[in-house]
Image 1 (cartoon, rainbow, N blue to C red):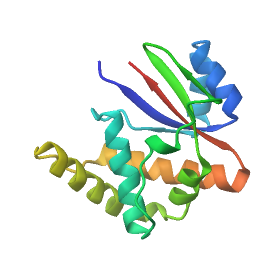
Image 2: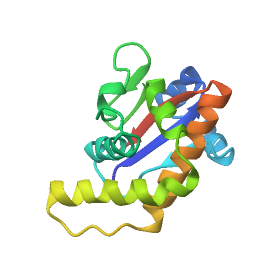
Image 3: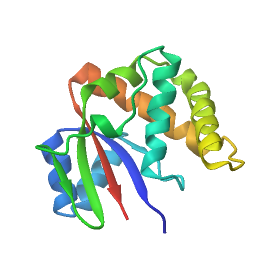
Image 4: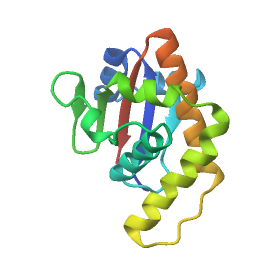
Length: 155
């Protein structure tokens, strides 16, 4: 089994505590509410930096990645097999600027960046496009409803 990488929208304390307490019922509840974007696509955490870079490039923002916008000081949990990090609102604001129909373009640029990095033939696929669509959707919810965006992972 690979690495599970997800983004979740809701209350940061509730989400982080659910990860800490291994409360999978709470995570399932968030999934049922369409508040999770699942990026468990056989990618690495660094690949999410390429994803954010792709969005900044399309919006002609100064280039930044995900990693520098993860809270590792006050709103986080990290263990050997899982973690949860509050994501700075600049990430949800960035992705909320996009329309759902922009997901293909974001994903294409993202995969180009990964191809260049790994020198591998990586084909854009529906799972990746769907994950980007969901990220746009949940970021729109996060900004309009003033919810937190949290990045979670499981080994």
